[in-house]
Figure 1 (tube, one colour):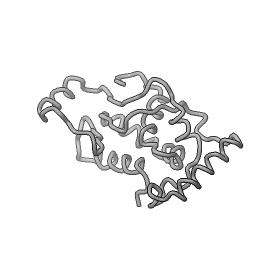
Figure 2 (cartoon, helix red, strand yellow):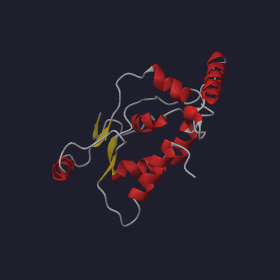
Figure 3 (cartoon, helix red, strand yellow):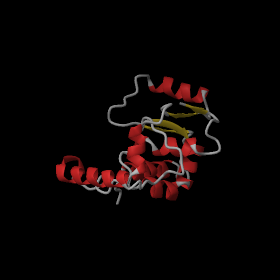
Figure 4 (tube, one colour):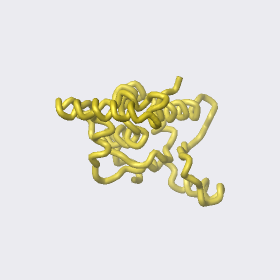
Length: 166
């Protein structure tokens, strides 16, 4: 059972690179993202930049990404979290306690954030799937980590500047 946006993205990547399926680029859009160019123009563009990764990475780490990923958000994956004021208050309380007690996780990795929208190569998708256990472990209790898990993993990789457009 898929519980989070991260699991959904990883599931889609797995299915997109299955044996026999040969995509050079994988594109991830959300509900408000619409292509404004014709399909032929989009294909031509990605043929001309073959091998480059397109991931939004904001230049400055904000307090928001640190709050999302440093502290455990125990209730954000619950079915009714978004509409339940009590669960949100309880989550806020537990995050506040963690801040007071200086309990943080993901302090051994630089955290980055950006849009959940991305255009990545098959090779980067394979790399992310190799990192799936680490990704699940690091970000399973994070809040809205779909906007920071790819950025953080890529920017912490040995190839962070290679063929990447931000």
